[in-house]
Image (cartoon, rainbow, N blue to C red):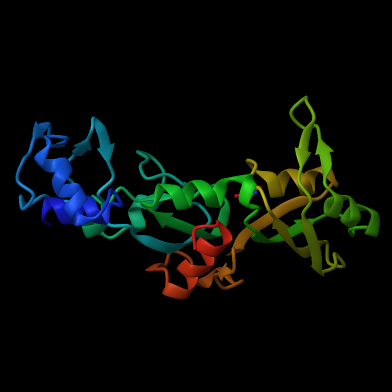
Length: 246
Ligand code: URA
């Protein structure tokens, strides 16, 4: 792609504005000052403007249905990880998962190279709803417990008080056979938060699957696990809307 187009696409100004920057020697490609606006550059070439590295990558957005038993990491020497599911032609696109799911959690993970969207989806500031489907072992939930979750509460499983933000629990199957099912909607993303909330109320999560994020969903059943596909325009719109980027 032409250097001026690539800089304009990166949001640095109009074509004529970025050409002026180039003319004034403010732009370096691969560490060398460049004065030719029509120079061809690759998305992977390091580009600096006024000494600042510019992210020139085309923005890509995928929905990955993570299987149980896969690490939320782009590289691991021992265990299966997300990179194993990313097609070879996308390996250079600096893709990264938005947040983390535990090794034994399956379900919805957004994978993108859009750092701003990733940051906002994870920030508690935007209160992006994340829906988890949990199978659990333990006695039935009481109304009091469900109300406590609804109001928010302090947890102290690490030796100090930590605030759990208001969340919503809907029990979909009672524990007559010892195993119940519940949907928990969180608007923050603390580490192991679902498992910790259930443990606080003396219940053990035995299977966990994230099925929704900001209106984007995957099937409740885990039989589609391991699939990866680009987000649709509509799904992307929901994520941008939920994070104030629409
Ligand atoms: N909460 C958990 O306990 N585990 C996850 O993977 C995600 C949320």
